[in-house]
Figure 1 (cartoon, one colour):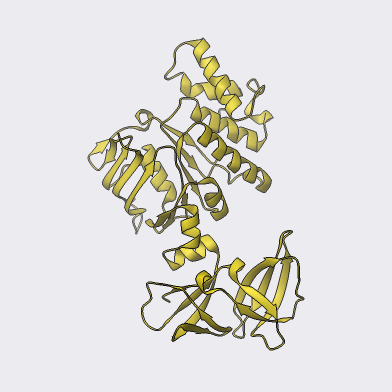
Figure 2 (cartoon, one colour):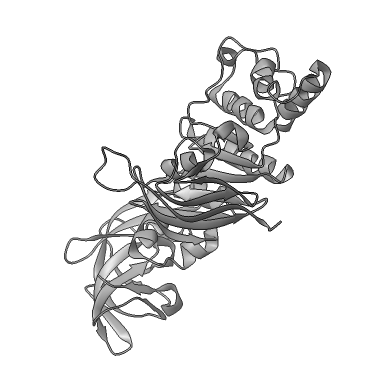
Length: 350
């Protein structure tokens, strides 16, 4: 037995009415006990990939294996109920006529026959998600966050080998989302449950996962740790989608890159073809200093509590953004000079 719980090799999927494939040659491995976040815009294929792993879709090519056992290929298929996979959906999917305890027990009754054992497992699962004492309430008597905890408890109760979560927090308020994403990670880690979490929220993906898979148009653009994806993006798309960085057209001049707001030195050049490219500067890496002869102008400033977020206007009218500590604030209309440390700068082909 290997440490790889989930193994996908060359998985592709094309729906009959679609012009392009939903999944294109996806290959990935996920180790036991790790949390993978599938991150990408709507329509990129992340939910189709999740459904294929769950068994709701069958790949046109490639193989899917769970715990070293093949579960899907074009000619082989194990149904979802035999894959020992737990699912948590965006819509909660609770039975409104059943209590919290009855909802959690629903999946257990298919595997456990002794009522006393079912009751004990239900109470354990409810306690695990922090809903002790609420087992006799109905879903309509709970908040959105509590209902999603019930859905999580129901999925965890049968002790699946793999947990799949399809944008489970997108219907919740911001503060509830932030709290629950931390709770979900804590619960998954406490139970040593391997999980795949689908989201279009980059902050959510970085916060909850051990591994991030960034998807685009059915492709897996990059698979890496949260730190790796953020600090070392392998494509312009990943850089823009994950880091929300600034991009400036640039021309090489020796070791420097000339832009409309000044010359910068870069330590890293990614897949560059030719003498022109795009300078990528993360918002937090862009330093701004007041300078009457500066090349950019402060168009707006947002106070975010711990930091200021500036919108800067370049001579061509392009907007750049910078995040700085609140110790010193610059007024709207101020001219500024921009700088960035060479190791924080990256160049991509344009």
